Length: 81
Image (cartoon, helix red, strand yellow):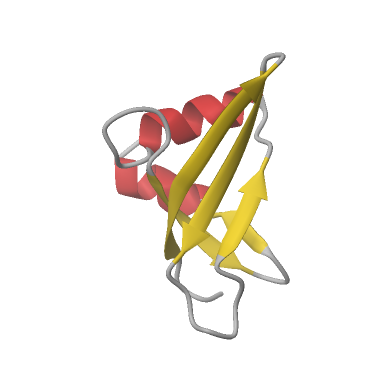
């Protein structure tokens, strides 16, 4: 698996208890620069607690495999949890 890239949360919307997050990634030019996720409430709390940044969700590790995804293993390792 390729090493994780840094993904930065650019937009966060909360609608009816659901969270919608948009990220940008400084990735090679042959990969998309943006992706969106709709995390479960538990995943959102993990992102908020373990990401780097001042408030809410900031920077998280992401991997690409036919689409971007949060690298949950690296997120936990980087945060020490």
